[in-house]
Picture: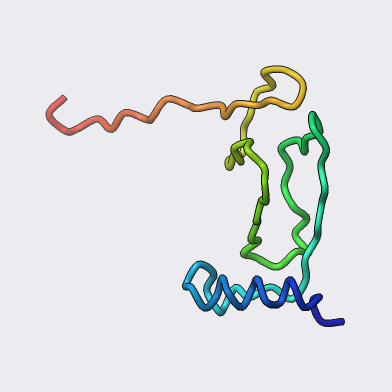
Length: 93
């Protein structure tokens, strides 16, 4: 089935304003509603979802963390694990 009209209008606006490339126009959507104190833990979306995956958060104030390694700070709070950069040895060293 086609996307609901409000979602289609939103996507049209995002594409029209250059915020979403036409090539990434979605053909499906998932709507989640979270209450105060709710959260979604770090995860990887299943490979059956076409890439790229676009995310739009409305009224949320929490940052979205992108990466592959996280540490838990407290319930519903994570921080990225930042690995030290590899040092490039130059031939003169």
